[in-house]
Length: 124
Image 1 (cartoon, rainbow, N blue to C red):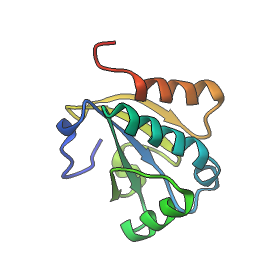
Image 2: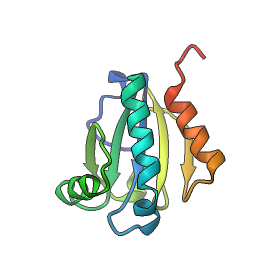
Image 3: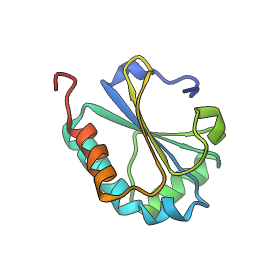
């Protein structure tokens, strides 16, 4: 994953939602992203770094409209972060290695997997 200037070691894991302000599935998934953000904050071991192809200002405004809170927003072309489209969720470890990826609109089982990954500790 090529997100330059990110210190992955600050957290045990980082969940990277790769989104776009023009992606209707991203917008429709906002309630799920709010749950993920809430769980990440509650458990404190997973950071959230949103990647958008749009400017950081556009992305931040979009997230505010959706009510989704993240630790940081990065502007980068979708392909440059190793994904083919939006939405994509990428779980990265403290060394920057990709541990798991979820693509597209998630079924309840996929949402549960993401939430379980956010709640888990490295010792589990």
